[in-house]
Length: 231
Image 1 (tube, rainbow, N blue to C red):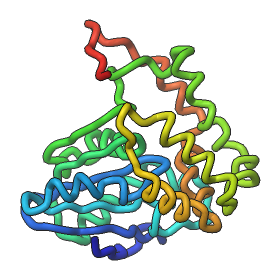
Image 2 (image 1 turned 180 degrees about the horizontal axis):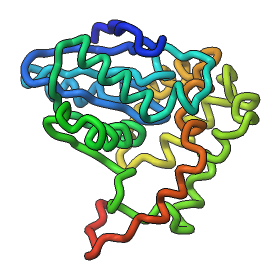
Image 3 (image 1 turned 45 degrees about the horizontal axis):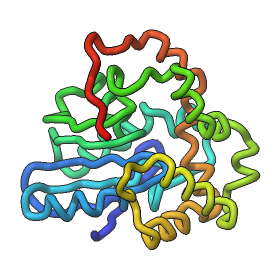
Image 4 (image 1 turned 120 degrees about the vertical axis):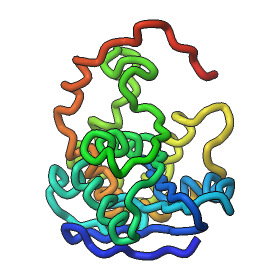
């Protein structure tokens, strides 16, 4: 996919791929990923839609600036860049699909700019789907988010491929389903991108922008009826 750079929004340019023609579909990745996560999806959509796939702020080949993450890498800041990209491309409304961070951003878009969303395909984290965030079993899996808020994470991992490789490999294999979500070559290439100086630190700006966000999970209620689990 040919990669372009957007005009800056608040000083941040987004790297993005824009392929195909037809109704626009915007695909938003999560952590630890980038726009390459969607290569199979884009291939499946080839000839049917126009696929726009950006690297979010601080990820991949998009700008990563050493600014306060609470403003530079927040959900509102990420959404501002996405809307800026749509404006630049002359796209009024699009279908959005995303996972992890991407899912969170689409939920904010649905709240703040619903007229820009023609349809949405979401995955957890999604209120009402899966286990409750504050359930003990779920919390035991979220240790890495606490680590990402500490300066220790930068010292241990940023720019250190020898340490970052096993770390990202654990995250990808631990959170993936029965079928590997990424092959070895793709994972090694992703690790290379995350191992660039300041790249890991920028990528975890998302977590540092969300200090105290778990408090909102207290208001989440379980679904009224049991929901089927996907094996």
